[in-house]
Image (cartoon, rainbow, N blue to C red; front, side, top):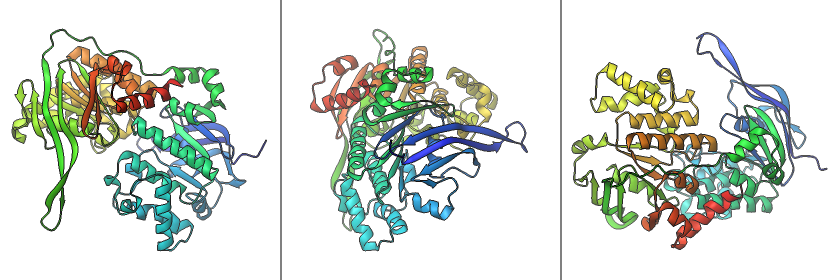
Length: 541
């Protein structure tokens, strides 16, 4: 057997943190315990497990990217016979980004918002290769073509916010591959992407791997991706490696109970039972969101970005409407327009009131009854506010209740979403992803709304946590007769929650209908492609 490219032996990682009980004391968290695994040249090893299992800590140990509070009580990490844990920092910097590349989970956070794409990709070339500016520019263009970014020359001067999610992830891949690394570590590289873009990015990584002869360490909680793209699988839980083997063997004959539970944790359930003769809560007529493109000294409008074009929809009270489509299809713009958070043309009726012409002050009364839960709870929850302050903020803005009744309402709603009311004194960073999403739901729910926009609320969560959040949403919908506009790229999730499905492409509705009927008989070619990308990939799991 050939010598492995990367060998991790008995790796343990501890974090020393302050004690919550004793301010001057510290406590040690054993994040990873005696993990051993190998990656061979040219293969893809998937490291899977739920949040907190230790998979990212293990991967970040390879590149020594852990904070100062981390230590390694035991373990050796060898890369081509080099001892990475004991290597001098200067030599480690040569390895990091040079011979080992890394794609991080969220490109919008990992990319510098103040620098152009050209500057960010060329930085690693200037640092590791000593290229001139001209050589770096040529190589950046070559990389952008390699990762199949359209109009690469024009994209050189673009900033991260000017690119779609899929394009940003391709830029991250270009940066990771700039110095032709022997090993690529991909940490949840497709979590926030639509299924069609996911497939494109993963196929791209696979092609580049074959072309460059790389090894890939793929960190993910999506078992559909693992089955389709990994040669071997290593399963982690609570800091320990519990199973490792060939992909087919692990999927078809899992040995450990945790592996079996992980494979069984697919979204399940059905939309809540509809109430007969429920009134129409929300209706739009020819809703349009067009952003002007202005050019010249006088900034004349020369064209428009057609984000949403002439959308008509009806949503009855107590029902859920799923809105699906790839990045840039207009899903979020539609939701923001319905909430009157961006300018639009056309009519928006909520409880028979036409909202389209109301001023912001007039909208305040309706905002209590129309709330939103965002995709990334860590980004949407203020790190400087306690959970109690976050949940109570809306009550204060609308002048509802006294200090005491607001605190009572906060405690009640936290309990309703499955959190201990005593947790209200803690801060967002002290919670898991699933708990933070429950806090975001509580913040919306405390105002007793009738309508909730749920913008990708489960995309960054593990499958088992997704199921818990979906169960919570169904329970709340039944109890309070809530109406959901549910934006997602995961059609399996949509199927378990939504009565109706609306498919968008390039700002237009290409198909609309009852969810099961539409999935069983999609008529538009784009819907067929979307469903094929979603269910063919997941069905293998």
